[in-house]
Image 1 (cartoon, one colour):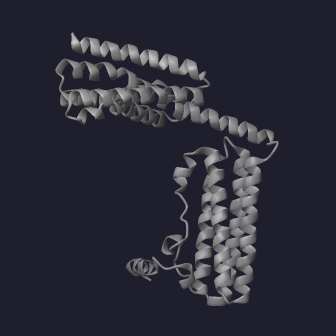
Image 2 (spheres, helix red, strand yellow; image 1 turned 180 degrees about the vertical axis):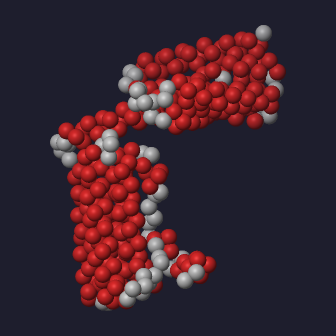
Image 3 (cartoon, helix red, strand yellow; image 1 turned 90 degrees about the vertical axis):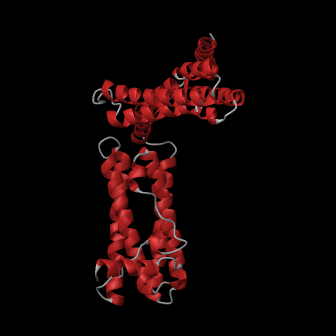
Length: 332
């Protein structure tokens, strides 16, 4: 079948419910699901193998089991319907949950991958129960029912591995390493960027605002300061450390996160100056500044183990000083 014909066939299927599928299409969809699950678990295992061997081993075993399910389904399809398996996947059927892209899940680390595995197994079990209930073929019904039970067992296994009490020494080390990497590679550069963007741009934005009493001028200054600081901080973070010795990860990711959060920190109290009335814009910008500083304090408490009162006091003091300097300079 040519590619245009395959695409046309796929569009014809799209929008159908599972009750509308033939037994051949049900088996073809099950085969496709098992292939996708095996491929996802294999990718998870390869991603985690070097740093999280216990979790990588779990995903390797799950991938092997999904491959076994696929072989079982292919043999059943061959016996019932021949050698040509229809091209169909979850995107072609209404009501079936589609999995998130593996690239996005891998970005979340081992905990995110384990969470995704539990969801995939739950979805698979639900699908097999639905599929078994609508077929009249005894052999197909038995196989799908057995697979529903197997996938439910996989979900329970993932839960037990994720919530084992007490957890294994390897899992404890993996979770500690994952948290450390998350903090070093994402939280730290993001927090540095957010602090710089939120605090360092206060002076130029409010100085321009009180010097001109013109919202648009303040907005342009704030926009330029935010973008300029974001580019500068992004390059500085990326060039400061290649991550090989410190374990802080790829410099490009850190630079991107730092630069993006720097821009976000400055843009927050810049956007209110799109309001034409100067005093209204300034009042809204002041409220935004308070929330920005509280967010910084919360991140310090949540991920950097800084006492909450200490974090709030330090951030608020620093922000207030810079804000006052900006207003003083602009009003002079």
